[in-house]
Length: 194
Ligand SMILES: [Zn+2]
Ligand SMILES: [Zn+2]
Image (cartoon, rainbow, N blue to C red; front, side, top):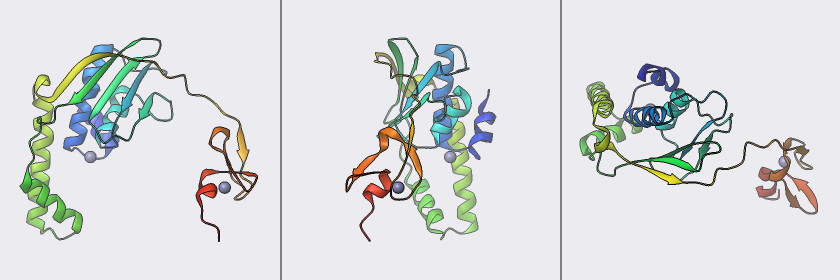
């Protein structure tokens, strides 16, 4: 598995993907195998491009239940093997990647659709330079890495499904809510009355 596998999965090379790739390699070397079934578990604390590298390289995916997502907006990645008490916690150092105001300004223009073709080109090349730099940086400049104790979560559970009394769609039992004395799904529970 190399960076190209991650790029293929994600659709493009970018700094976020490079961070995830470095994290994934660190974990793979530490635990020394790709998760065949659901042995290696990754807990990710953001929803950035980096997470795609972890899915592609470590084989940790949402559907298999060995990718656990916490929406903290942090570049923190914790890996463990089921049954183990120790986990590897990898955290991106806040000063690892200095802010680049010019790059950020170009990015804003691209998002707003006001970038000229030259500006778009400039952004693309600076984006690629940054991605490449992250791939080559020494580990200790990028991350804080330490072992932590964990309480492993239970294996992915299978729940019976219920039918929502309002929309008629099925949903997993623990996610049911009661509204006006009837069992409904979360979207129907939260919907405003017509
Ligand atoms: Zn990306
Ligand atoms: Zn419903």
